[in-house]
Amino acid sequence: SYAPFKNSHRNHILDVSVSPAGVPESVSETARSIIAEVMEKLGAVGVLCIEFFYCGADRLLINEIAPRPHNSGHLTIDAHQTCQFEQQVRAICGLPLGSTEQFRPAAMVNLLGDCWTSSEPDWASVLAMPDVKLHLYGKQTPSPGRKMGHLTALAGTSEAAVERALEARGFLCR
Image (cartoon, rainbow, N blue to C red; front, side, top):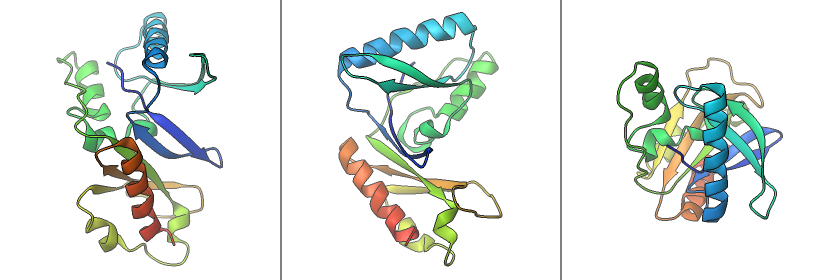
C-alpha cells in the first residue's frame, strides 16, 4: 500500500511531515509506479520508504530509499488504522497486512534536542491539546539537532494539522 507524505526539512533534518500530501493524483500515480518497480527489483518485503524530490510536470527523482519504518511515517502511529511499525511486523512474520486507512489528515513535527536548551519543555501545555500526541524516544541526553521525539497533530485538513503541530511545538521549544 502507498501513503503520500509531504516532507519539509530544516538544516538537512526532517522538520515536518504531512499527509495527505496534497499533490496531484498524476504525481501519486507516478510515485506508485516507481515504488512498485523499486520494491520488485529489490525483492523488498515489509515497509519501504522512498523519499522523492518533486521536480514539477509529474517528474520525480528518488532522494532516499529506507527499507524500514522511517521518521517521515511516524504520524501513522496516530493517524492510520495500521501504523508502519505494526505493518513491518506483519509483513516479516508472513501475517496478513493491516488496513492503511488514514483516519484524519495529520502532521508530524520532530522535537530536536534544541528544545531542551534552557529547561525541560512544558509537556503539560502540549498534553492539554486533545488533537496533539506526544512521542518521546527515551534518549537521555539532548543535544542540538538530535531527534528526541515528535508531535503528531490531527485535524480536518492537512494545512490545519501542520498549523496545529507547529503551534504545539512552539509551546515546547521557546
